[in-house]
Length: 334
Image (cartoon, rainbow, N blue to C red; front, side, top):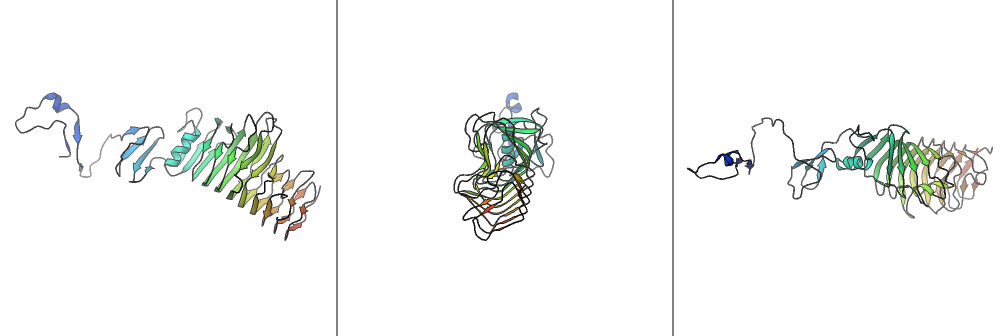
């Protein structure tokens, strides 16, 4: 008997009304003979139950997603298309990290962030996540070191956002991409909004000796809007295979000299203060069509910076080339 009264009666026993009207229990499979279950709601909760069985389904009200236990992990089933974040509550979530967690639980997804100001000390990303803002009016204020974590991740995209850095003391970098791959920054306004001091050393960082690969930065802009005296560089991490294209990064160096390696990169049609290479090495890179403004050094291919093509850049001072096998030509000095 699959559905029965809680109180078991023997033949001839008296059944009381309270027993008859009590909730029934299910102790076996119920065959509905292909009939529909109408007006049915699955279990609502804000955590995952202990001891699930394969095929068990719940609905997480905090993540706005249904989940099914596949025998090993809970898999999200209800999150599809775009997850919307809005400060006024006119979306799925008001908090970006909660939206990221919901997309991650469903195996990845697109998070559309409506215009507004969102302040965070840290966003933890996961594989296969895209954060897309409405436009540069979607401002994410990062208030701590390494406020965006993309460590050991792949396929993470940042699109049409204003990332503002407001920190109170010396900060190495707001974005960490240690050992990450296929990370894209597209139409991002990088805004050092810190009001004073030597606050942000670089924008995108990685631990010494680590690298990132397949990094794309395109159509982005950098400004110091808060009056801070220093943002030294855009990158401070070695990169193998990257595309840095059509960015206005005036007021900042391409990279920080910390003995890191850049190789197999295409650095084209950008505005920088300089592209260095004195204590780091730049190898097998194409550096073409950039405007570089530094009065002391524009492009410095130091010893170990080999087999690069540096062609057609407009520079304030002629490139320096002490490496091997570099093609340096047609770089007019203005």
